[in-house]
Image (cartoon, rainbow, N blue to C red; front, side, top):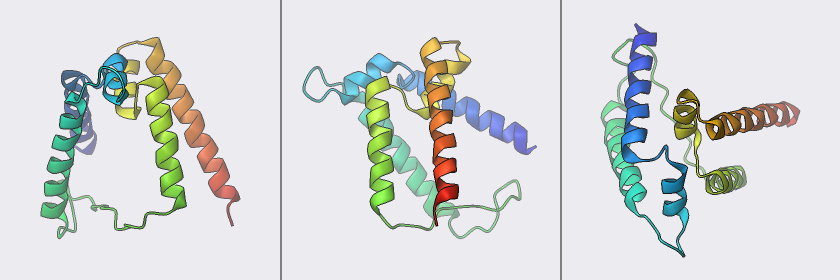
Length: 138
């Protein structure tokens, strides 16, 4: 049952990305191009997602388990440190250079777009490098 709900949630998320235009690297680059022909439409998509997520998190914060009976893992850390800022800068730089972020990259990969494959391989390599460096930390 968990896999079915995960599949349905992923499908809704992917369709939402396609409908919002977030799977189109040109649209994303248009959003990030503040000095040229800026396209603010993705800001509305992100604002809508933040509102929905914020309301949902507040609603379920007191719950111990999900509707499926699984433990809820809502992040409790609110500290903004150097690692968070550095990671955010790296994520933003990658997003700006490629015009893709992880969710749309999976959509592009599923659609057979070569740029999506390159991005996902690079993303997995970065995740592997992070895990390697984390194991080395004292």
